Image (cartoon, rainbow, N blue to C red):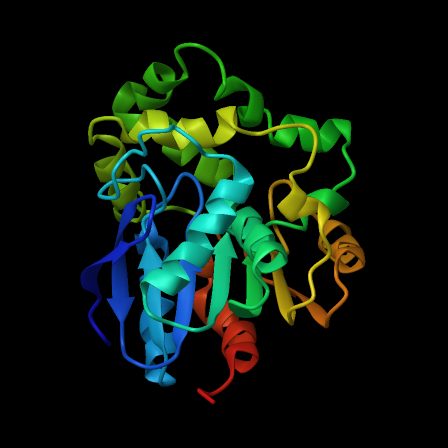
Length: 279
């Protein structure tokens, strides 16, 4: 298996720490919450084996990427970070794969910079503009509200970051998470400022969709959902189709919100054919 190489990506606003596997055309892998670039440890080497360069940045504020001075974690800012990373890596275009907050950012990136995004893959998040609120969904994402409250960082860090396991188990019901799967997140959140930055993603959420989320997406897209996701259903993922002017496919695979880690082979079975061979 190809070992990850730590690299840095210099952009006009921030220098991102990242993991890199292989050489070839760029596939950018964008993590979510509570997570780090290590969420792609089983995926990056397999993409590299096809002849691509897979790069997984630690998103803004997630150690070892520094906390941005402006404290801006708005979704379109995260989308522009993706585009800036593509340019910073010297690529003309990239296939973008995003999970959770990384998926929301990837939707925005594809809408704001379709010339830089060759293909789009989103994991575990339906297109945000297509989601219909319900009491069940609001209960499932109650952390969206509690993470914005004063003292949220202290509560999240209590008992050796017990909330990390709570969220993993809530969103991926029935899957037994070994402690080693949570270690990278806890290590990152112990770094000064990192946990507050991670919760800043929630403080930046707004009721009105951003321009990058309101716009339709033209690039070829694969949306992947988990059959046992703790919040989103197959119907939610299917409803995303209306946000696209280009070709879009929806695939449901075994697993919950972290399906790419629970059942990496099942995830790769739908991802790799869509990624294809380097052109």
